[in-house]
Picture 1 (tube, rainbow, N blue to C red):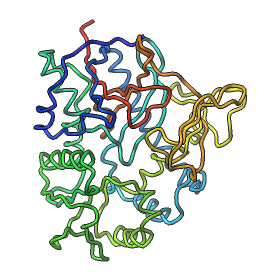
Picture 2: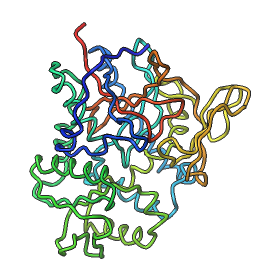
Picture 3: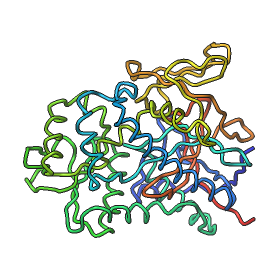
Picture 4: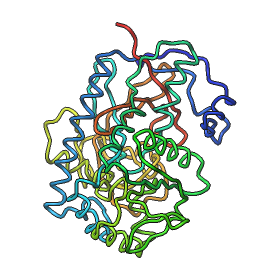
Length: 380
């Protein structure tokens, strides 16, 4: 049973003032739970260790994919292959951040990888700011596995000093815009000159990437999925390929993170590391005589997911917009539960190292109506 502590909710007016205005779900309920998960220092250390080991495994799996041209297996659009390979070769194309989703890790349960949101992970505002604010608001000691803001800010220092970074998100999506502007402030703290421009206003040419005032930027951070760009903007993909090839700009996160983002990498990881304690069995074919989860390689927010019993019967499924993507089948593992039967998935942000833990609470399949739950490390 998961260990919870009741907390006083932060007033919505206060959340509004700090820029967190998506605090209420569409059904009128609060997105931020009025409880936090209690974890031990030992459990926090195990989450940290797991995230660092897993990232090294992803690097080796990425090398394997490129060496063996496993693009189809991962469902990666063909028009992204060359830009992925080029970005993989150049150190300046740096993976800024991602988020591991994990089961286990509490009450002596083993940590298991569910997937890696390597390209456009959500929850950065909640993880770095809100759960810290919850402890302050409730007069608790500031004791969390949560150094996300400072670690991600420091991670920007892997880029060339003195260069400008343009940050972009879709106009009209408040959550994404505020998240991007938070990351922009981290880059500012790292000493970079930055600007923000909505995606549809960014200018591209063979000379590079520009804002709406024709200012050229060495780096462009965009919170928009690479696979969507490949499908929706094939001409832009070709232009971005030329920009990278001619060293006119660097895009963050780089194209190669799509290898990590594809859930097809789960099968590659199982092939390469079958004895790892963190890796669940995975295949591109249904797992016979094993309860498993079918999900789409580029599915999001719990859409188009099926839970299949040991005898092959569908126990639970969701619909969505990702049906045309390839499926991957992963061994089922249950999440930690509270007394009401709610399930909890751990999320660990990675920015050169594991740096921020938080939890999502929901039902059998976690979706965009899942609740955010912070944590606190208790004194043993």
